Length: 213
Image 1 (cartoon, rainbow, N blue to C red):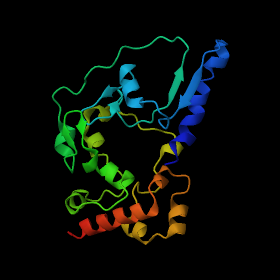
Image 2 (cartoon, one colour; image 1 turned 120 degrees about the vertical axis):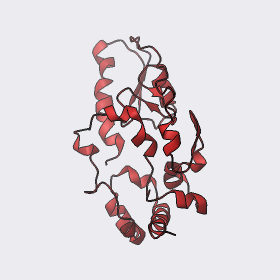
Image 3 (cartoon, rainbow, N blue to C red; image 1 turned 60 degrees about the horizontal axis):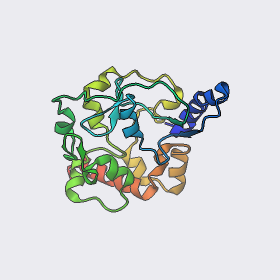
């Protein structure tokens, strides 16, 4: 998948042209979740999504989406703040491989496989390594089991299709990448936020788990 800026920025720019069309002189700022706006909280406040038990905001159509934001002083009609839609459901709590969702709406990032494989730079504890299974980059178990995502519509945008034919990477190949192979395979990919040493570490863990280590 391409970097989200390549996909979202043109769309957000087109929408934000309302400022020019209205001639209102309103102030405007575009952001794609990379600025200082607390996107998830704002989304829930504005009715664009809800806080799910597994923590991030899930829109009514599910959480398989990318968020683009336009902050403006232009007076616009708004929706009511979102309400709790999870009820007594605890599928994500029960399914989380590492128990990172310690209670409804509470996530211990130190146990989260997405954090460990993408953001964490050091070594990963042996117990957590075993619980990572075959997750090489990120983890979507909580989203996979969320009932709201059964309503998600599959994107037809080619830029959002998996880059690799199978939708997955072969950990054996990743473990053998050198810097040149890493750059070639992930050129223009958001996956490059994870540097080669971390990907190689993740690949070793996945391979060890596959061998019953």
